[in-house]
Length: 288
Image (tube, rainbow, N blue to C red; front, side, top):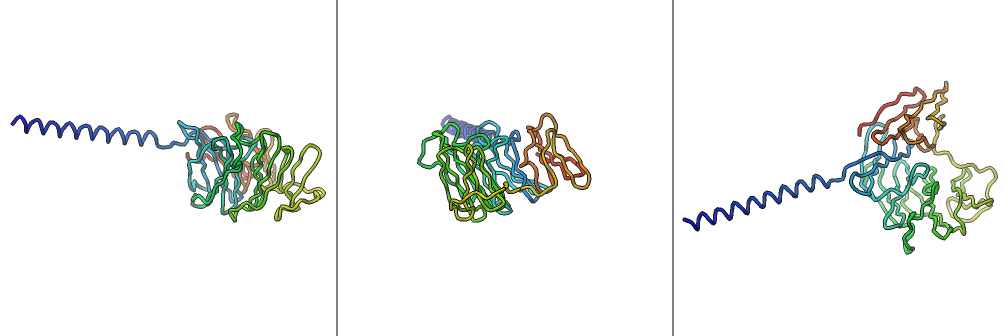
């Protein structure tokens, strides 16, 4: 009888321990599940949507959220975002979105299908080079885009630089070019050139082939925003018919030109994301 009781006691104890461990495991899974935190920045897309960066609570990772005109399409956890306000590290077309991230002191580019969020490709911009505290990214120099093209600027610690030009919809690196000094500005011109300003000299390359060319006269940067809108000191200005200025709250990120596209301006505050719908100045908050 005593032996039978002892055996039952052992079974009860084992079951209790098992249930306890199982509950602890479930609690850990719930507590460790990535949770989106503060909004960081957004790059507007021509279709009226945006690619949004958010912090991940409790870690150094971030989230990339891709919005269509009316709702969130998908969300993906990524390593730390390489960009900052005024230094966008995102490019997007109607098919692809790329995000530049930091891995072990290196800048990496992740490419996703913009509709469904499936990962298409990734590569290290500084493969074979030592880690860098700034991850080879200088203020104002990360990702430049126009149409179906983007340029990733790799700013090396020794003061030199490399430009990687991407054919976004083809998921490929088209060509690269090296500069002895880090440029102060890089842009894709209306005349089909990638251009870089280094001190008083402008360097130019054919967008399609990467061949060096003489800079074309008056080759302004391509406009990624087709709206009759612009950023002003206190917000967004719309000039379709009548002039309307929509101010942003003092808690919001300072408005940037890339916050405007597709007839909309995006207002980024740490705890919420809002859209200004065109010249009517109607502002609405997007559900978190």
